[in-house]
Length: 556
Image 1 (cartoon, rainbow, N blue to C red):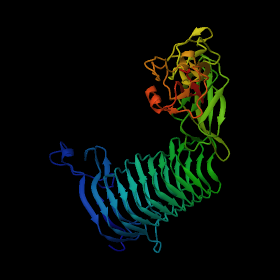
Image 2: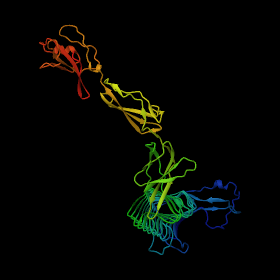
Image 3: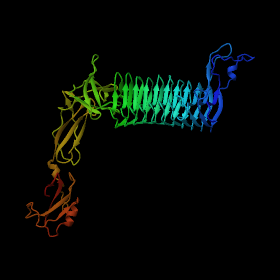
């Protein structure tokens, strides 16, 4: 179809308000049940060139038209909406509009190649125009040029504009207006828009995600009197800001990339309220974030506020990092009924704060708020949930009734004792626990008393481990026959025995010039076997290495 003012005009109802309708002979009873809105039609593989004509001074390639009528003497009340039409794989070159939809639902517009004809006398019209239409999908189209918007949506609900390649629209790549609700604009590539890449305005709502918008004359994406969420978009080299909120009370900018824009990465204007998180910025000429007028950029509230290292006079707060935050304000009050929060700290390095100089056994309430330094103002986020914390009592300075010394046994030595703080007896494993060290060998043992429950800190105590006389008497003599020694039951295990010769029935406690030493044997019979045969009288003593020195038993 070449050089037509209208190629395809698909109507479910006339657009003349005062048209006369013929009343069925049976009247209107049950007529709504007999109406079928599903056109079940495919418009495919057409090559259409559109020009202005006498009958179509505002030309278009395809129009699908429905209409809602109020009840009158000549027709029933009914919304004659058009459903079930697919417009796919067409090539359209137009001096005006390509596709115009009025009061339709469930229409699919996909994989069309649509371009604006600048070489003919042309008209300032949108390439794809939706009015009071819902559940329309515009996807994978190539849209090139126009004096207006590539895709225009006014009214309706639940429309999707996705994965289109849009170049050089005169105004916006996608323009959503007129209170249109629940729209999704995703995965589009928009280049060189004459004004804005994407515009949401006049109380319209849209979820705008994963679009790439470059080199728009003004903003990459703007909400002006509209609302919604912009996430995971790439906005680069636009003439003003990457993201703009103008007089928009409910807008969210999450995880967007704003690079090399000639204005700001994000700008909030007038009464806009913008929640931001996870956005990244690079080389924006005037700065990353700018807030003007009564607008506000809102950071998320810090989550997971916790306390740790609580003691009598200090405690530490920790919280999760808030995206985009430059720092945090920490507030505190007591739990008194008339107490008010006061800012006690500004944290710009990390996500923790230690509060010192507190009163023992006192309850405090804390909250944390993130802040952001913008180009010329400081923007604050929402408050965290309140955190109520009670300080503890210290165990420092406690006393005990621990014994000062214990005998060496070769095993760990522990004690049962009481711990007192300000005259009060503490409960073990409730108020404190104990840790022992160096409590086996002869020397000084250490006991650390560590506060638990309502007590904090720790205190160290000591006691001695000593040897007694029966510790060194390793074997006891019992004579069985001549030239022999035997053992009784040792008090503690010997490591070896030293053998010597007696002189004139009197021990001089001096070893033989070449004494026979048996090491690491515990049986005295092995001493006999190893001793020299010419020794007339044998004497033996046991020994053991203990705490770095050799401890000997008595000569036997």
